[in-house]
Image (cartoon, rainbow, N blue to C red; front, side, top):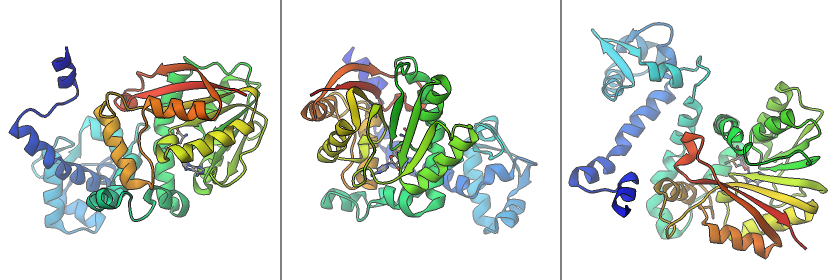
Length: 348
Ligand SMILES: C[S@@+](CC[C@H](N)C(=O)[O-])C[C@H]1O[C@@H](n2cnc3c(N)ncnc32)[C@H](O)[C@@H]1O
């Protein structure tokens, strides 16, 4: 049983596994650069030669051909008589014109490349040279937008899943703290006609959320507030505070500060609803959650994926009583990082 479980977790068991794993970043960078050049969208109208593409992209013809050959070798392009075209998968996910386009997430991963390169120093120093994730979210409109688009893409799938376990029928006023694109508030406002929500986020992300809310015609029921929840007021008299995929950016003492503010901001009997990745088995599994923790190590100053004990203790310390813990098994794209829904009641 144990062995089967470990196999399911991609245990490394041969020299080939070690070699393949150590150079897997080669393939990753090839895909990320092809996406950065938007090769796939450029092939969406018509198949092209490497020379055609290098003229359009203003890149070196020889280097472009080698890149395209590798992308085709990896199975993300087809090559016939020197002419490149998209596969079904690249057409669906990597062409801007597709409704399932995910290239903005790949742009975000490519942006994180420099942060990963600092890992050696981070292990010595304990944190990156700068708060890379928030630098983008606070100062770089293009990167903040890619990040918000990525949150929106995954959030729209995730909210359908958490809707099965969460009833907001009696909630009149909700705070969506670090609400990103606003997609959770939008979904719930559409479902519950009595609900009003405040989406609170950093200014560049809030700008994106405002557009989303206006597009959903919900400006009368969803207010988007710009701010830093660690230092600014977060409002009051909420029935529910929703915190989704925010806590992994911070350490336990910052999370304690957030929970104290949330406690003050809630009505008596109010609830805090946390959606978060959770580490289990000595903080080593699932492997995707342990690896995501390293992404937080290189991208944030104090972040990591927390385990149940850390989240529970911090909730209890700040006078919250857990009433429900629900493991999410969908959407598939996030499942491997072990997302949980944790609902707690405000105590005295
Ligand atoms: C991983 S995203 C999750 C977004 C959204 N809750 C979701 O699940 O789709 C984390 C969000 O928290 C916001 N955030 C992080 N620290 C913040 C702070 N100190 N003040 C305001 N927003 C913050 C980020 O800008 C980002 O939008």
